[in-house]
Amino acid sequence: MEKTEIFNQVQAIIMEQLDKSANEVTMTTNFKENLNADSLDVFEIINEIEDEFDVKIETDEEIATVSDLVDFVAKQIA
Image (cartoon, rainbow, N blue to C red; front, side, top):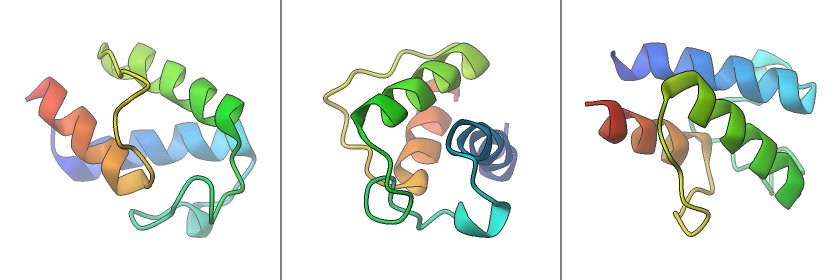
């Protein structure tokens, strides 16, 4: 799966979880700074990502931006 496909799925999950529009969720978007996501929001997003891609994301992973999350998923499913 290409990063573009991963991003599209990740973006859709984030948009649904946080009620954001596509232009608010880009590769450079920071969860806390740009989306005002709290730890529960991030936890829920990570749970959805784990289910969608069948991966395990540890809470100590350095995932601050959408790009971090997409890169992590890409490595896990490669």
